[in-house]
Image 1 (cartoon, rainbow, N blue to C red):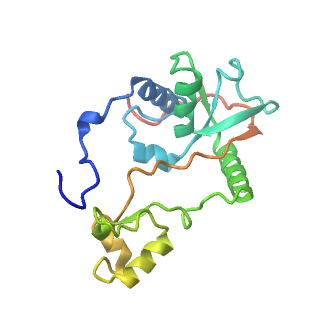
Image 2: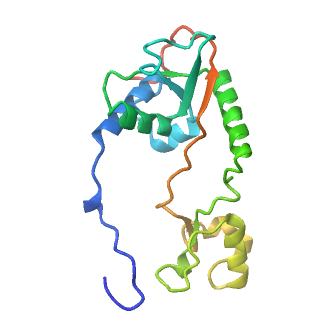
Image 3: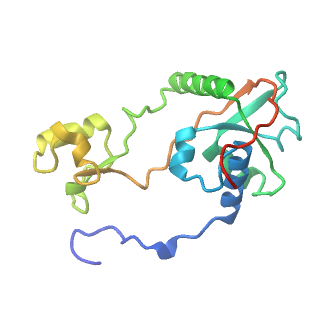
Length: 200
């Protein structure tokens, strides 16, 4: 598509390439967390587990004594691909619910120290009415988007934001998730393995 004022290339799936290494790592993480290989990204995000890399610990499991780096599943995938080149021998250990809660608390503490963007201050929202125009506001915070709608009522109804989602505004798909803060902690000793609750 060409024309005056048009400055973005149309989306095409031809530019996408399936990442075999990342996919294999994700399957290994699902196995470590006792989750089905049919688990969706949304379901994994909702579970939001924390894992440790057993290759970095030279095979040593959580023993309640040594300090180990804790990662979210997305950070774990990036770690495996970038540090271990997607090596299939990399294994993971999933933290217990109690240790996971503590890891998330420590992540929040580190984020606060560095004034890390919160959901309220993170610029991720785009106005549909402004897309492909010279006056495009770009990515906005939630408060910024609401202010934009108040100033431009034809762009969206600030009193019914939920109904306007993905119609008048959307979360920018080009914005990657902010990586979790790097933390290290001493996890509790690994519990005996349990049988996953899904059917194979």
